[in-house]
Length: 86
Image (cartoon, rainbow, N blue to C red; front, top):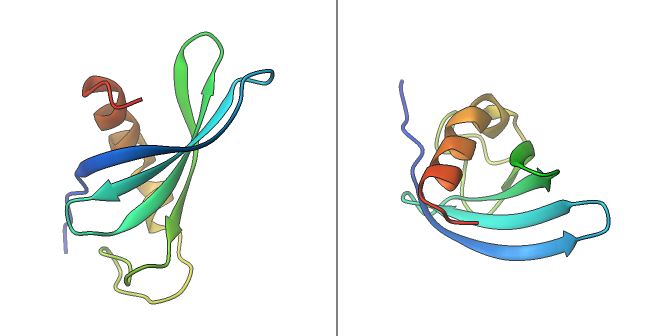
C-alpha cells in the first residue's frame, strides 16, 4: 500500500537559536500530525521526525509508536523547504 504524505500546515513548536535547532508540528492532509526536528547551520536540514499519536499511522495503521514517518523524512523535508513553510 503506497501512501503519499502531503504537508498541509506547519506550526513552530520550539527553537534554540544558539544551537540552531528548531521544532515544528506538521499537519498532513489526512489529519495526522508529526513533529519535525530541523537544524539551521546555515541551511535547513531535517534531522528527525516523530509521529504524534492523534490518529493511527496513515502508513501501517498502528495505533502506537512506529518508524514509518522516519522512512519518509526526505519527502517531508523536500515539501517543507520547497513550499517555504519554515
